[in-house]
Length: 110
Image (cartoon, rainbow, N blue to C red; front, side, top):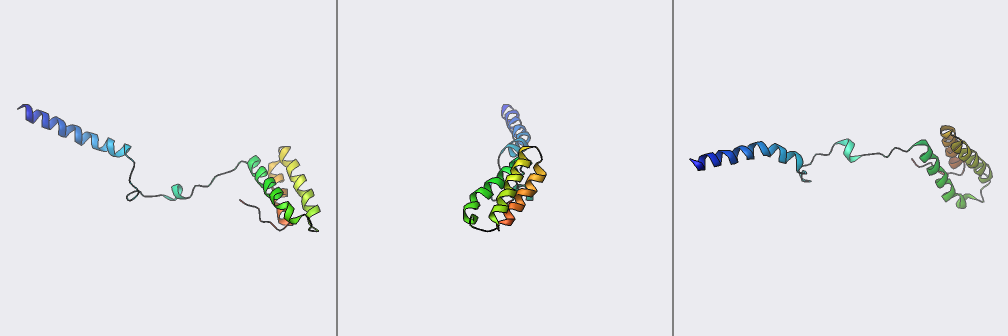
């Protein structure tokens, strides 16, 4: 009699515990299903971060273009864009920084 009660108790715990265990155990890579949102997460930058990113891109590439005839104008656009960004007008600053990069022949990185 004790064995039947014990076995039914063990079976009950196993049956009730299986969904909990399955929910907390990570799936193996063979059975895991990736959804598009997991496989292609894109970091979204704030406008201030985007300004800094474009400024750094311009600065990193400016030495290669410093002898270009368009460089002086592009450098002025870069300064204007950085000023707009620092004064709280990030959207206008981003546009100006992208123009500066395009003026020296660079594609703004996204």
